[in-house]
Image (cartoon, rainbow, N blue to C red; front, side):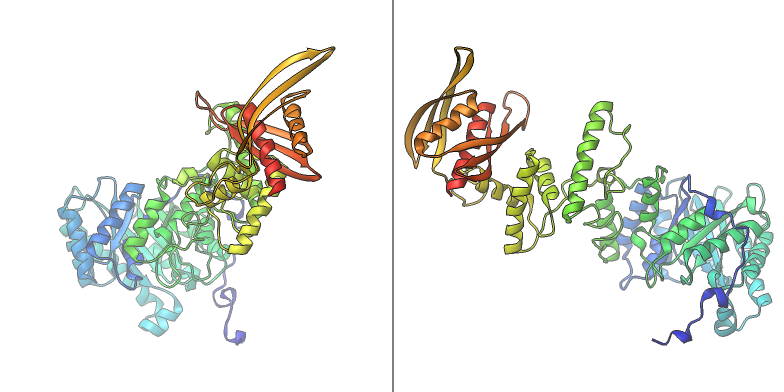
Length: 574
C-alpha cells in the first residue's frame, strides 16, 4: 500500500503542550449535552427524516432530558425551516430547552435563520466558517485576515438580526465553530475565536459557546485533547465561554476523543444518539452518557428504556443499530462463551448473597464479571445475559436453568448436563433457547413427564406411584422401613425395604429387581415457597457400575428424592 503519500498530523499540524494537565484529570460530572440528531445526523441519512419522524425524534430527545437540541439548517432547507416553525406553532418546546440552528456567515442566510426561530422561548444561532489552510487556500481562496473578517462580520449580523427580530422574552445564545479546527493552526484558532468573542462582547450574563469540531478525525485522541487544553488555556475571557467539542468517528475514536476533551477543559458535547452523522458518524451520546454512569457519574439523561430509545432511532433514521453497539445493541449484555458464563453466574450468586445481607440493591456496588452496568438499569432483563450455543459451558447452562426454571444444579450435574446440551448444539447448530433446554432436561432426567410443548413421551421402566416410611429402633440402631408402590413397565408393583435412612432403604428395594443402586452424593432445594411449594432433589448414583445423575421434582422432598433415584435407575437402563 502507498503509505508514503500520507503524512502524520504531528508533522502537518504540530502542537506542543509540555505542561499538559489533562492526563491527571478525571471526569466527575456530566457535560452539557447538545443533540445534533436533527441536523448533522439527519443530513447524513440516505433518506432524510420526514416531518413526523423529526417530531418523533424531537420528542424522544425531550423525554430523555436533552436540554440543547440543534434542529436544523433552516436557511438552507425549506423542510428544516418548516419544522422549526411547526415547533413554534405547536408550542412544543419546554421552557428549559434551548433550540439551536446552524447558519453560514452570509447575510441572507442569517436573516432567514432569524425568521425561522422567532417566537422560540430559548434559541441559539450557531455560526461557522472553515479556517484550515486547505479550505482557506483551495476551497475559498481566502487569506487568514479574510477568514477572520468573515467570522466577525457574520457575528455582527447575528447581533443585528437578534436585536431586530427577537422579543425581550427570548433567551438568546450564540455559538461559533471554527470549522475544520483539527487541521487549523492552533494559534490561528485562538485568534479567530477571540475576535468573534470580542464582537459578541462576552462577559457576565453574556456567554458564548466556542465549539471545536473534529470535522474529520485526524489524530489519536490525546492530540485532540492537547488542542482542547491549549484553547481552554489561551482563549481570552475563558470564564465566559462554554467550550464545546463535536467529534467525528473517522478513526473510530470519537468517544475517547470526547472523553479526553472533557478532561482537557471542555464543558459541552455535541453528538447523536447511536452515533449518526456524516461518513462514520458523530460521537455517540448514549455511549458517552452510559460510560459516565458506569463510573458513578450521573449523566443527567434518562436512558432507562434503552430498547425504546433504539427503536425510535431506528425508525426515524431507517438505519439499524448494530448488535454489538455499546449499551444499545441486542447482544451487548449477552455471553456465549462458557468461561464468561461461569464467571457471570458466580458473580450473580455472590451479589444475591450480599444484597440479602445488606437488604438493599443500591447499597451493594455493581461488580459482575463481563457486565460493566446492570442491564436492569437500562430496561433490559437478565434473560439475555447468558445464551447458549456450541461455545457455551456448564456455567451458561446452569445460569439459564437457575434463572428461568429455579433449578440449582450441583456442579457435577452441571458438567454432565452441559455435555448433553453441547451434543445437541453440535448436532443441530445455532443457539438453544431456554424452552428447548428445559425440554431436553425433562426428557433426560424426568422420564415420567412429557416435555412442555413437545411430542416427547414419558419414558422409563420404573415410575413412582406412592411411598411411605416408618422409623423404629432395633437394638441401638434406628431403622427406616419404606413401603413403595411403583410401576415396572406399566405393571403395578409394591416393595417393602429397610435401611438406615429413607434413601438407603429405598435403594435397597431395587435389589429385588436385580439392580444394585448406591447413592454417592445428594442435594436438594426448594424451587418455590408457600402452600404449593415444590422441591427438587438431585442424586449422583452408581447403578450397576454406571455413575450418573438423577433428578426428582415433587411437593414432598422425600418423594422428590425417591424420584431422583428412579431417574438415575431409568437412565442407566435407557
